Length: 461
Ligand code: HEC
Ligand code: HEC
Ligand code: HEC
Ligand code: HEC
Ligand code: HEC
Image (cartoon, rainbow, N blue to C red):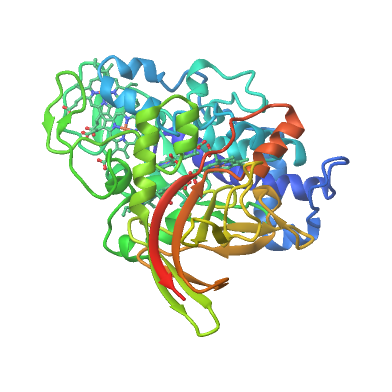
């Protein structure tokens, strides 16, 4: 086996257990930060060898590859222009630089005394992490290639996946570009077929985050997919997310200048729920695609009944019809999906409302919310992944499944009423953006809501 691969594999436990190293080595929380302390004995009992190894390896962090070992995406753009354009608008291209990621990363850094730098960086800035340019956490050592997040040459020099969480990709940077075909002719590089690029495991190794010290599953997209109907039928992440539109579709095209005409060309926009970010970055088309994905994921169904005393019993069913995983998925502790219910009388006056957005752009605190929150060492709910000691709240809609909520609404008088229900999505809570402003003075654009689904009905009392 290639020497670099061996070096890399030896380093994986180090990246993975850096958190343990920190927790067990210091044994107490850094003064002002207030992160929970995990007793050294408890960590050692859970992971005796790894924890010890992490303490040792932390001192001598191996430099895995030379800086510059991975090529810059600009090089690829010469021949792969269309793929480059689509990728440059993806969240992968923005995984490090984006101004919504940075405040969370820096807060984690501060509260753990830097123990999370390489954990987060392994996925959000994989080239920097694998060429020794991270830490420092401020990115001051990054070269231009590292700043472009998860780029072409990171994904296309992967030769295998050794571990299905916290980024277990095996890299072999060099002239051989790995991918799903292996039959193309390029004057610039060699091509090699790798089955892993066609499998969900390729994505899953990053879309599956486990807290190194407490074992809490922070992001569970891959294991969720693996165990549901989509996983069983092997409808992969690529099938849905490497297409420009929701659902499984085929778009013919050429992957490169002088490339062969293919019946389906992998789309590199990796569209997901980030319409708000895409809009703020000025990528209108990607933002619209994102809204289409959100609308394709869910449907609402209503059942209503008015009792003799004028109580409307309204049941709202939320169906996950289009996502290959729960909704929400991913950083569900940062996202917010909620129900809006509004009842108006014949004059158009609102007689009941739930889930509305107030003039501070905050969602009604009594809204029915679909998301995850962690509990910290003291049992308090928190969206801070590095403090997760367990799951404190988890309400999500499973793939091809449903959830429902019944509202009991007193109707004020005899007459006809219009009932409107909407399922809404936000990439962040407004409170979290307010906190970023208070902490750093950085004002992020007010978060925008996207409608995933809606349903209306008329009732009479
Ligand atoms: C997050 C990882 C990732 C990134 C970043 C990425 N790719 Fe890909 N790429 C893939 C995967 C996975 C496939 C195979 C998809 C499939 O066929 O199911 C692929 C397919 C391809 C193909 C073959 C397309 C075809 O259908 O014949 C080319 C060429 C390619 N990528 C080039 C690039 C270039 C150039 C960039 C940067 C501008 C890039 N990729 C960025 C993961 C990535
Ligand atoms: C001089 C032009 C040129 C440059 C520069 C170039 N490529 Fe390619 N590449 C091609 C051609 C041509 C093909 C074959 C496409 C086909 O026929 O489908 C190809 C194919 C690929 C494939 C498909 C592999 C497979 O068979 O599945 C990948 C992945 C890829 N290139 C990645 C890259 C990356 C990453 C870079 C930048 C570091 C890059 N290329 C730079 C011309 C180029
Ligand atoms: C090296 C780790 C890595 C790999 C490999 C990877 N991803 Fe990602 N992915 C990320 C990170 C990190 C983000 C979040 C970036 C951000 O928002 O800052 C992300 C975001 C996304 C999003 C959300 C986009 C949005 O608009 O909300 C989608 C969809 C996605 N990835 C799909 C895929 C698919 C499909 C694959 C496999 C072909 C894949 N990813 C492979 C790390 C990875
Ligand atoms: C059947 C199609 C389908 C499959 C299969 C699928 N997804 Fe998705 N995915 C969607 C749709 C539709 C959305 C938009 C709804 C949403 O954001 O929850 C989405 C959203 C996402 C998001 C954004 C979540 C957010 O709101 O921040 C990520 C990340 C993601 N998918 C990753 C993956 C990964 C990784 C896999 C494979 C393990 C996968 N998806 C498989 C359809 C699919
Ligand atoms: C194993 C890979 C992995 C690790 C480790 C990881 N992340 Fe992520 N991160 C992701 C993926 C995948 C997404 C996209 C999920 C989605 O779109 O919902 C993401 C999304 C995010 C987002 C949302 C960004 C946006 O643009 O919407 C933030 C913030 C974030 N991560 C912070 C962190 C921090 C802080 C750490 C370290 C404590 C960390 N991540 C560690 C894979 C990872």
